[in-house]
Amino acid sequence: MWRITLRSSACILFTLIVSLAAGDAIAQVEPIHVVPANAALQALPATRYLSVAGLGFFAPGDGGRAIYVSSGSACSLNDGNGDGSSKVKSADGKCWLADLSVGPPSVKVFGAVADE
Image 1 (cartoon, helix red, strand yellow):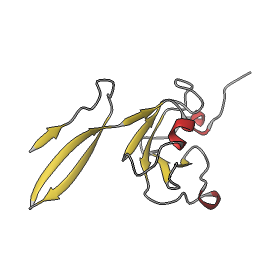
Image 2: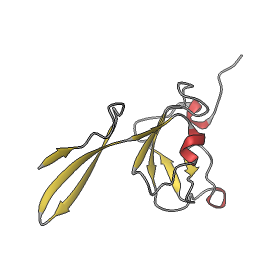
Image 3: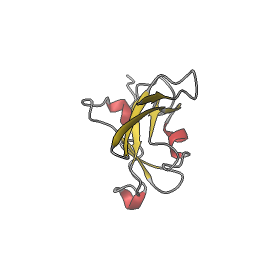
Image 4: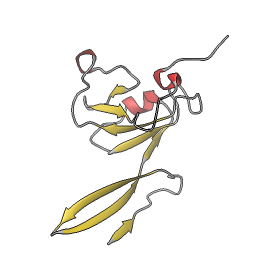
């Protein structure tokens, strides 16, 4: 059985959560929460969402767009503080991990600014 749940018409990214119950595969599609930038990502507890889409590093559209997944544990860098880009400390002390599996990220995901 497939069930699609839309909580907001603005959500266009989805993550697939598959669980097994009583021997039958049950899939549920949940919308990914969207944040404008990494500062807003840091304000979210990692236990609240499985994944989050960041629309930029400093501001939406600055080229730092990335998908982050909850690690369920503290960041492995900087005594749990992460690096602020590929590993972002969450409000509850856990870690948001950038999903870099799609290919090489733009340096803007790490806060780089292309100026003269």
